[in-house]
Image (cartoon, rainbow, N blue to C red):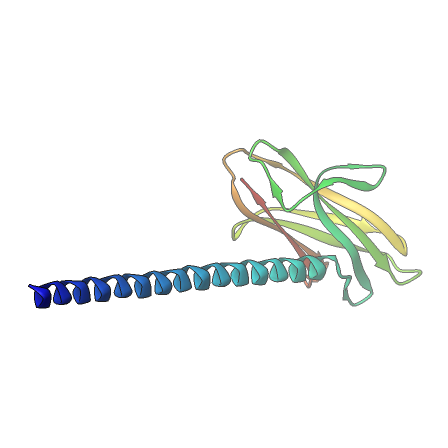
Length: 169
């Protein structure tokens, strides 16, 4: 009887120690998952900051420098209002505001080419008549046109100067 009791006690001890080890492994796995999630979120935030910084950097092609380009809900007093990279599907109309610098004494024009996904939706030619020129184009957005959008800012010769991306949800 004592031998059977000892075997039972040994079996229970082994069973409980195995559970404890399994729990330790489970806790370690949970901690690893938390660390991986935090690392992924940190990497995502860093990538977004890099893209944001890149989007705000001036871009130059030939004599044209795009100092600022932003998608927004309106333009008032030659200034963008309610800039964002995400807009609701009922936004109605969006604008692409562009601040351009040009070599003194030059005049030219730029193009705003609006894309929904990879489909060209509009092309607007805009004059640039001074060393510092602020301009914009607009596009009425149907509520069914959700998804990724971009507006490419190009020279007259179709050279890409800068691209601005946003999403309609």
